[in-house]
Length: 429
Image (tube, rainbow, N blue to C red):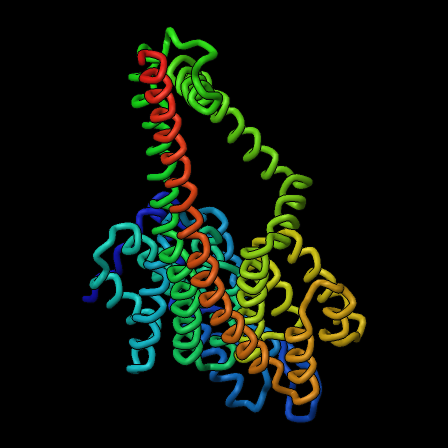
């Protein structure tokens, strides 16, 4: 006699609900579809999994508009045991890639998840996979199971999986999703890597200047104590700066901490965030880079969703949420209502006055040629390349500026001390 599968820990306290979910072999799925005659039909179909339900309906000549579980017990189970498993972006990428490979090899979704559980090295990822497997065995589709983890899977991710289930090509969609996540990670990693060296350089510059003023300059203060106004102005200024730093350094640190907290609190407010984001994209060197980075994320998301059968309105709504800059997001928020009114996306973008002619023209070409998904993906690739080139170009200019500033301040301190020593020697002579 075959033993029943182990119930994940989040189901163990759900009593009869858990037993019902695990003992059930068939689930009911409600659907809306278009028949061969062009009529909208709806009904309920029974199947082991949502993929089999989708396959059965397509075999009847129906074009699916929506397909979701109709069993109230499974829904109640999900509401009562909302998942708490967690995983990082790297875990999600690895999971997506492995699941695509296993599904392409012909494994059913439940068996693929079981194989991934056996291979998982991270406890949190294993816990997440076990809970997903439990939901799938309860008759839910993978996309519905993923909805229990909004902190791990974005609405974009879930919509992609849902489109793959509805079309019956979940493995191919997961492969495209893996490619999308890899490209997004690559761009983000290249930007972060490029900022590491300037960050280290800036830290060294600040520590060097503080060390000179706080520890080196005070050593000469006793030498110059009897000079008074006979010291050069530059020497007196440097000694005063060192004196302030040694006496009130703790107060300066407190004021700096308060200032950072106040700025962060202001930026987190709606008005402060809007003002900060608007100022950010107006910066001479880094403003255009931020703009292109955000537009590239939006374009890649829209292109990927459209290419997998998601409607334009849904794709726009999801893609807008991937944009972090509130100023750009506000401009993009006009797209969904405009498209709903029947207005072209390119026209709505042009009316905002925010987006470049390249963005508008590529969207217009995509609309006129019927290949908006390809043009949005192409736009994302163009802007990704420009972002990486822009970061390198800006940092190439920033690095020597930091070196010159650090060297200039240190040289200024040394010159001030030497001028003071020369003045002492002149008076002694």
